[in-house]
Amino acid sequence: MERPVLVWIRNDLRFHDNAALYEAALRGHPVLLVYIFDPLDKGPSALGEASRVWLEHSLARFGEEAKRRGFGWVIRSGSPLEVLKSLHRETLASHLMWNRRYEPDGVEMDTEVRDVFQEIGVEVLTCRGNLLVEPCQLLTKKGSPFLVFTPYWQAFQKACPDVAEAPEPYPAKPFAADIYSLSPEELPLTSKLLHWPKKILDIWHPGEESALHTLEQFCLHSLRWYDTKRDVPADDVTSHLSPYLHFGEISPRRIWNMILAHERYIRHPACSSPGEAFLRQLGWREFAHAVLYHFPTIAHTPFREEFQTVKWQKNGAAVKRWQEGKTGIPIVDAGMRQLWETGWIHNRVRLIVASFLVKHLLHSWEEGMAWFWDTLVDADLANNSFNWQWVAGCGVDGAPFFRIFNPVIQSKRFDPDGTYIRKHVPELKALPPEWIHAPWEAPGDVLAEAGISLGREYPKPIIDLEEGRKRALAAFR
Image (cartoon, rainbow, N blue to C red):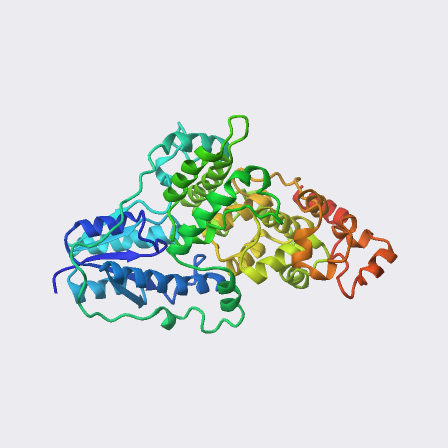
């Protein structure tokens, strides 16, 4: 067997704009791609249930395309370092390549693997990963990490003029050797999951092809409305690209370039820029990853140390009602039920349900972060920890502790007709719009006509909103 180039695949399950695959294909050798599942990974980046469903099917799609292009494709289970060493003994690979990661565990592991393989004489090449600008590239004039988004975004735009994509990779020689591999179904991903696989796969279609199609449809049909309607959950003009980004089925460079290309055709000189509004969200994602890179403890510890003294509630029954969408607050319940049914939740509603848990119910942001991690198909360590800390007010550039979303006001503002609530909380569908946001305020005859008895068909509010607000303010002060 001719000595191959070994490429370690992680959260980069795509062939467009994949720098490591392109560099490997240039070497003129057969190329063997390897994905390694570590069953002993119990750290903060260990996969949640919804992500396991997505990964299994994404690996299947990626493997089919790898073989079609002439790449070798191997799935193994075990310690990544030991599996890579074993594959090197089996193949005598001349090179080892991968796209860089920026999470704390990933950086530590990549450094160890690089050092070991360089010591045994294997050429190691690492390439730009799933960010537009790497965290170490973008610092303040004093050489320190940015802690506020606005100046970060200004610097980011100046640092990001070149978003050229890596060309499509095809190896010069096909990988023809017979080598042992697991199938995606043999990994311990979804075999014990009873409810998630069918729910998620009825709605989502993991894989690079679906990712590129989703981006194209967003650009054609929703981008023009993004700036003005992105906070309206019933309209939902958001991109739905977040899970594809997380698993690397689409690159941020492809998204950036496509958004700019389409905006030229839809932007009116007198109107705001929907493309810029969307690209700013990509910038927020980059900011979250940069903060985690420079401050790795935010995955489990508040950035602002004084928040460690907050006396959080320990009411498991209240958290369970929040998780199940049975709080008696319609917009909160709609969001949490959408999450449970689809593995995803609208961006504006994420803020509402998170604020309700942390502020009104006074439960730790870590409890919410853990639930989102297990149930979101786009669960991402940097985004999840960063955004939960932002809502709680304990992160960098966080919302101030006294900013407490009133869910009823939010509901009336962003779901005025109650369309989103009716979809996900059908027991309230007969309520008129003026009462659907706060059914406990509705007259008895209105509730009776809608077939609702509070506490029976729909729960009474878990907490008085004003009392919850006062309690949160006192605790945070």
